[in-house]
Length: 166
Image (spheres, rainbow, N blue to C red):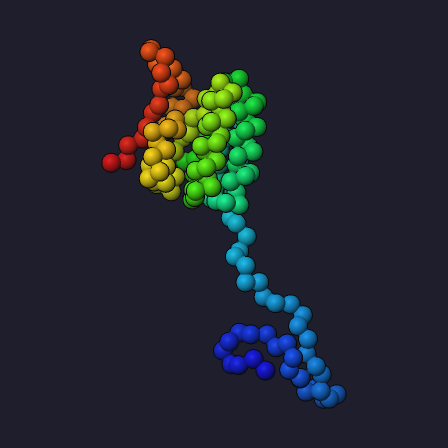
């Protein structure tokens, strides 16, 4: 019998019933795995010839490939600009950051723009700032700002809008 308080499952004890001893067998083991990842909601919509991808939930190792696929599809489907709305993302880990980097490089290689709306969402902006990606990625406060921004300045340089939370 399992010791009291251990929460174990009996696997070889014998139960005694009115009909006599009945050997117990292991039917199932409680799952020790982590709970399934929180839902990641990704919605794409066209806005004036551009595509806006709105993301809600957590972008972690399990969810990053789904987000990557959605961004690449949107970049391929747009004429010029893809806006990634991360203002309602609850968590962004290194896999999510890597997704942003590779998606941005993909957009640049295809002569398109990936703009990221993060507002002051600390769950997103903090990892971006800590890694220095705020100097590489095109960040905006709102989706509207990202949609109306110009990709080029008068001197032909990329126009970036960094968010300063200091």
